[in-house]
Length: 149
Image (cartoon, rainbow, N blue to C red; front, side, top):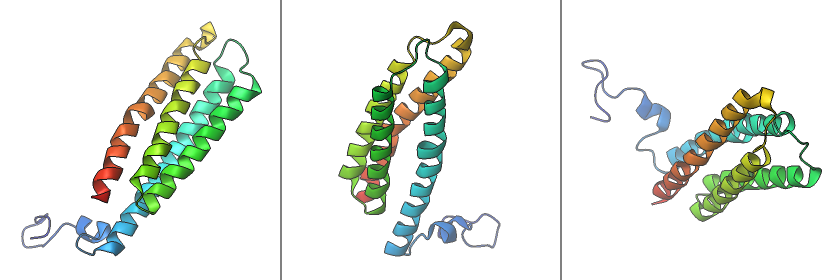
């Protein structure tokens, strides 16, 4: 059986068809596109908006333009590297992008080290988001290398 019956007498469970199990290169490309789209929405979109908003609202002192530009540029270029590495099955490129993402995350957290006292709850949430993305980065990189082999 290809994944075990979900309902007695019914072969497979639908996920086989969705993920294209057993269809070779075509399913590989489809999975890469799905993972790339999820990365774009969750990390490049949602996380970047949250980190950028936190950088604007949380610090006790205004963060100057140079660090803000450096962090945003590093994040965006790293995101391009991660997506490109995923689409062309180049885990080394994905890893370089992941390392730059991690460095950018550290920069985002350091920039908000001294938050305004009335924003302490939001600053804690901001740090938790950054930590979550930081800890999920090695998982994504490991998956990129495993998928390649």
